[in-house]
Length: 114
Image (cartoon, rainbow, N blue to C red):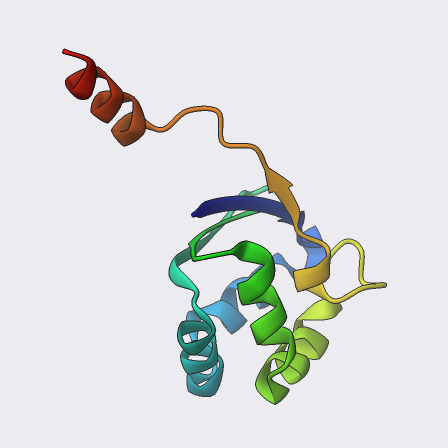
């Protein structure tokens, strides 16, 4: 399963967000991997738009597994003040986007039809 989501970082804290993600805690990195997050990337626009992409077995399941880890609780608390909606944990504020096109899927469909 591929999932894309969006959120919004406060512009005044843009540089701080980038700084923290340049050196994510090793225990957080390992927890993400162990919880089933694969090929996980974050993209940050100059307007504060944050777009994430992750591949996983089940998005709700990998989020639930991360929620059970102590390191995630600490990380979310550290990051919460950087987001536009700081009233909730950043990983609870993700807006999942609908995938409307995938090159590999369409190429596979065409090659199997012909």
